[in-house]
Length: 135
Image 1: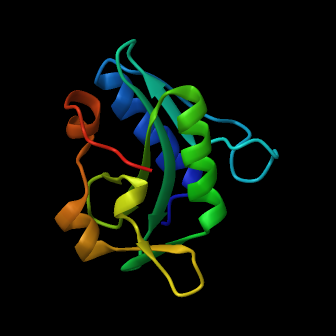
Image 2: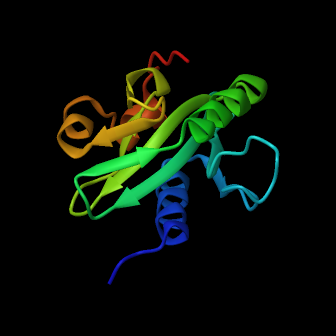
Image 3: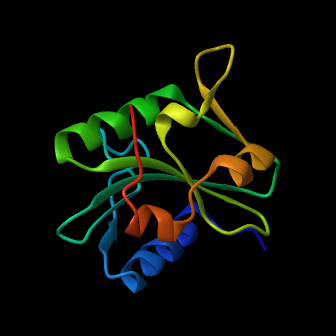
């Protein structure tokens, strides 16, 4: 059975609540609005996270530049750390800051599973440590 994106988003929200973050899915993300909304927003009063969520059973995830640009725009306005949260089949959640995501020839983005496993942050890292994020 393949999980839908909303199922993965809910899973991530629950994991953030378990780490003492108030977290919610943005109900109008994914093109339902012209506003730059990420899939998940979370905060604990000290740290704020904006996360665009992608999951796949394949070895590579492709992301439109519009989504990454919107994530960065929202994060800048909100004061959140922007992350792409990726969930490959049979892996834990991994998080990449926008400046670490590989660009494609047509100016979009891609994340390869082996690279995400090598450079991605784990959920406890983005929830607890001060991660240096650039965008």
